[in-house]
Image 1 (cartoon, rainbow over the protein chains, first blue to last red):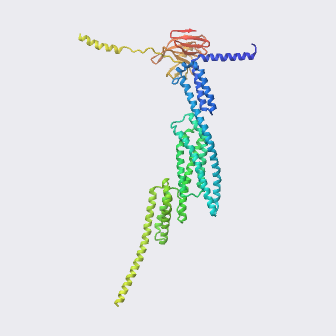
Image 2: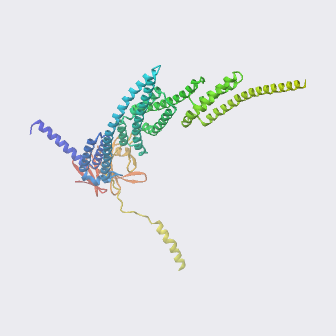
Image 3: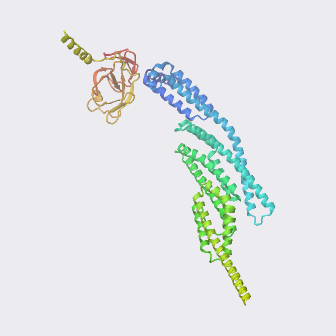
Length: 409
Length: 148
């Protein structure tokens, strides 16, 4: 009995008994104790990392229910607007929701691992393809084999990018569908669940990388009008999806500086992607003019393009009579028939108008100026013919009169 | 006869309108005591039942005029009859108040212990308020206090 260890353990036992006695006798303390344990379990559900955690939380709920079974009436009266059973039911329901998230995440995780492998493979292939295309593009004298090889590599890269885009857009779409089914503000558990899905899908990296690859592809490839139209459509689709999910993600990650920075970087990448496609379209159109020795100042949008083209036409109209007629005619026919009505209007103008890079009214302005130019050039042509015809008629008259006079003499 | 009938017909409804309406029985009891902390001005606020009052006069009554009621914890419960019972750590008494005209009026105070209570607890029981102080348990009603 005199053993100090024994004394200490007795003291601790007494203290525990005494404390329990006090807690057991105070209704207020009992209710506070229940509320605290309820809150702890609620937080554990939010912070659960997996199905194992859910299992131990389930045991905590069972223990809570057992520990307070003798105080149901007190808790029913005190937990307004809840009662004992509804409190326990709330915890069970929250735990089931969380467990459902983990089951879904576990299924998704397997699917994502497969997708990740495919994305990694496509990324590697794309890097190699881009390098090969660059090397071939840098060749000054491309022979037929090189050109064919370049075409083949470009097609392969295009196909790879399409596959990867589909995977990434698929991931965004699945997240978007879940967001749409939660039109209101997300609670903490839902926020956490989405965050985990985004992390498992490596969403930000994949979107960033996909856009970068597309930009690089535009930079290194020789693209035709229909290629660029496809790219522009792809951009619009991707961008529309991002505009639906982006603000929701911004709201979700309002307090996460790293995530906010990623979102801003992706927004900037989308702008750059759009800029690169537009620049490439204008550059391709301008190369058609250059091929025909028609020099126009740089332009980057529909208004500038209209101004440059109409400016050129006005200058050519002013030059009628100064330049040789044949030269003026030649420029007109090259510009109007070969370039505008031969290539730009059928191939590029529909793309420009469809993607709002050129307005119908701007196209009409250009075509009315071309018509005006034609009228002026053709007038000059006619006046020459009238002049020649006049001389011919005059010669005929002179010859006719001289033959009449000869006959009379 | 007609005259009496008319007078009766007028007077009877007047009596009916003046008679007071009483709803009985009423149980005012709170299931649980509330532990409330006063602010710097000695005001405590009970949120569930929207009750706010000043505890400075209570502390002065218990400890004298120089008593400080800043950040003091009180324990408050209402019994089934509608009386409020208040006590606190260090109090010798439990105070019973009734509510009337924007005030809590002291009805009775129940002496518990001369040294002041160390850890008083108030519980709602069917017919009384239970006061626990250490190992002692008391039953308090509007009529008095009994040590169990």
